[in-house]
Image (cartoon, rainbow, N blue to C red; front, side, top):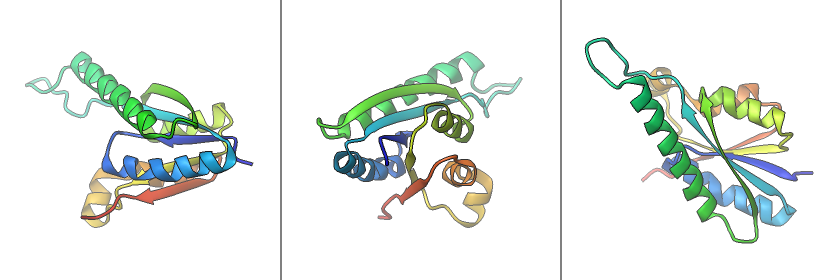
Length: 145
C-alpha cells in the first residue's frame, strides 16, 4: 500500500518530529523514504536599498536544503531505503508536484502548529500541502517545550 513515502524537511524541529513517524511506517511496510527539501526561490529580502542579493539568497537556500536532507537521511534507520532530493521553488508547490510526479503513496511532514497572527502572517506549508496533495498527508506537530 505504501511503497514510497515523501518526507519533506526544512531542517526545523517540526520537520525532525516527522522523521520518527516516517521511519516507523517505512520499517513496518518496507517502504522507501524520499527526503525532500525545497530551496525557496522567493527572495523576500531583496530590495534596492540593501538586503540579500538574489544569488546569495539562492546559495544560502540551497545550502540549507542540502544540510536538511542530509540530517534527516542520517537520522533514519540504516535498514530504510532513502532517496535524497533537493529542488528549488515554492515549498508547498514543489512538495505536491514531487508527490504527483514520483507516485509517492503518502506524505509525512512536520507542522509548527502556528495559530492566530503567526499563522496568518507566516502561513503554513503543511496546510497548503494538505489542501492540494494528491496523496494522504500525515502531519506531525513539533513538541512544545
